[in-house]
Image 1 (cartoon, rainbow, N blue to C red):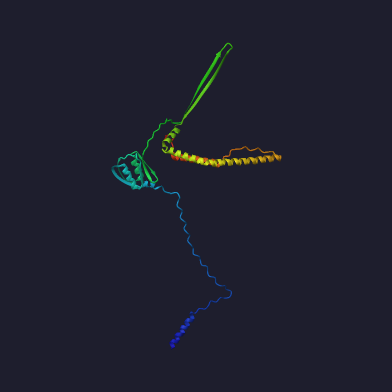
Image 2 (tube, rainbow, N blue to C red; image 1 turned 90 degrees about the vertical axis):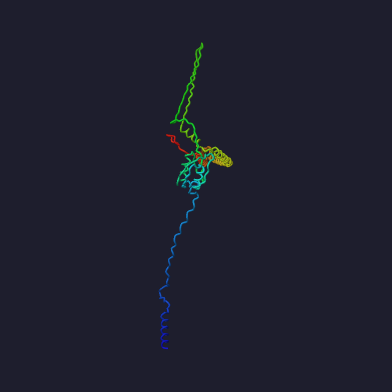
Amino acid sequence: MKWIGLLTVVLFGFLLGCATTPERIEEGEGPRIPLEQKAPVSKPAKPPAPPAPLVPLRKPAGYANLEMLISVNVKEASLKQLLLTMAEQAGVNLVIDEDVEDKKVTVNIKKVPLWQALKAILGAHGLYYQPYPGYIRISRMLTKFFHIDYVVSVRGGESSTSVALVSGGTSDAGGATSAGVINVTSSEEIDFWKNFEERLKNLMKDPLYDILQAEYNRKKLKKDLAMLPYEEEYEKELHRHQLEIFSLQSKILAKQVEMGMPPEKVPEAKEITPAKVEAAEVTAEEAAKAEEEVLVGSYTIDSQTGTV
């Protein structure tokens, strides 16, 4: 019993020691404000990826495959079959013109770009290749000749012819004489480089140029015909405004005369050409010139050697 009582006293003391007393707030002290917690720092968001370009940055597949490496080893093989084999290795489409003659060739090349192999093989047989979007075309080389008078520089000449006519007569009363002079002058200038450029321009002109030019003229005429009603309406509106201006000016002059003021000079009617119309005409001429260069081709000529 003694041990039980002692154990009870110890437990009771332990419970009293663990008891908590309420916190006392002294006078003059306000309530405690909890410390502000720092907001978590958010990482900056990554900028969005740029949009895809509207214009492709790479050339079509038909052009890029010209850099593919090919290897061919044939002996006395068909030229057309060799070209088809090379195109199949490079993964390109090939079109061979009907007038290309099939010959026997012997070729041994290893890891050579397709364009270099085509240039070497086709050049030896008078052929050439032209890349297009999606395929390559093999054609025969064309040789054209034209005649031109070679002159080192611009040459000019001038000729003059004079004819004198004299007539006279005698009589008993006296004599009379009359004379007349006729001068004929002609000049000629020959510009070699201008003539050479014109001939060369016709030589390099696309065979379909006349057809394309006719189609262009047809579309231009159709466009002009479609614009006629608008131009007529514009002219009517312009004349109407001019009549209103002249009517207003006449009223102003009449009012000045009525008030005894000296009337000002009546302005003369002038043709009005809007700046926008002139700018549109210049733009149309530049576009037509650019289209002609695309159809005919562009080149430069050395005036010293005649090299194109």
